[in-house]
Image 1 (spheres, rainbow, N blue to C red):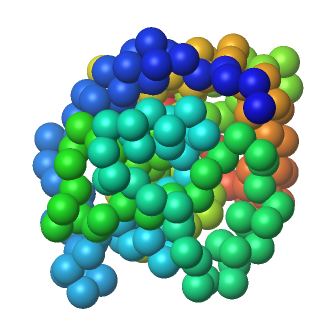
Image 2: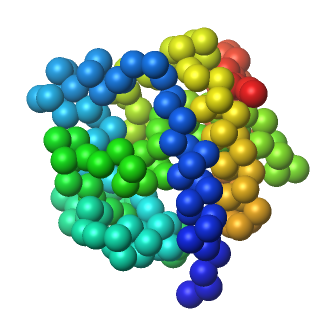
Length: 193
């Protein structure tokens, strides 16, 4: 398998995404409704996806992340259909979370990029799947750190330069999102720099 993300890239991505998303701990809002576990840390419902290089990099530094043994049928199906450069992983949970070891997916949730047909990142939008219980979904842009929004957009642009097929995946997702919202008579809310 061809390595696309170097250790230098990973360090840069982690620096970009280490800026606080909000000035409060969003996990403190949803955790009480989920037996004390923030929804995005619930491994059975939100399986963290790491790039192979990212997973190997973490494993070289210790055993914080391990491959997921999944019980959830929907996630199992997604794993079987997934792109070959992902590893579905499991963290030790929020009580033993090391903020510096959070994966890219942990640092970007609940956002993903909205990408136009030409491949340009237009901004960030709320993720479509696995977000029903996230306390941040639907909140206005003013609650987010502007530097986080800027850095996230930069991250996606740089990642797409390394993984053009990942960009293509988000172009498709972005088109589907626009069609769905049009049918529902709703407008897309894009978080821009």
